[in-house]
Image 1 (cartoon, rainbow, N blue to C red):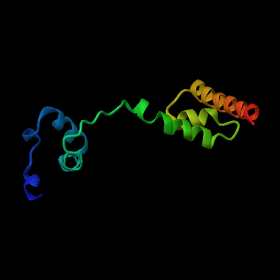
Image 2: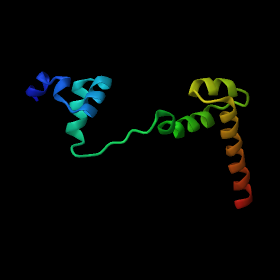
Image 3: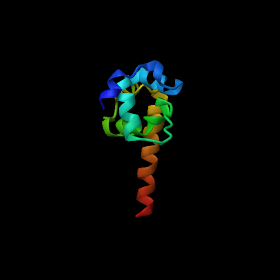
Image 4: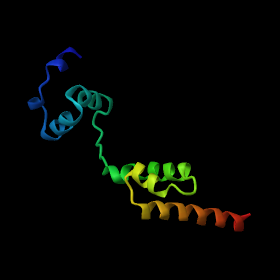
Length: 98
């Protein structure tokens, strides 16, 4: 849309100004056009990406890289150990289920 190229951040409501400041006016307009009248709620990144980080830890664990996985994901080593111990528990339970 040609008119949107002249859109200024001041033309937007306050919440949209925050989004436009973060991702740019063009991307904010694209979101508004793709999701009209849709209420979007963005979880905190630590909650939003946690399932993917857990999957990453499980898929990339080589037996001794707890610290590297913690650094890669921004999680604590204790949490990495916890994730991996839960995986072991699930495997053990599968033995009893069969």
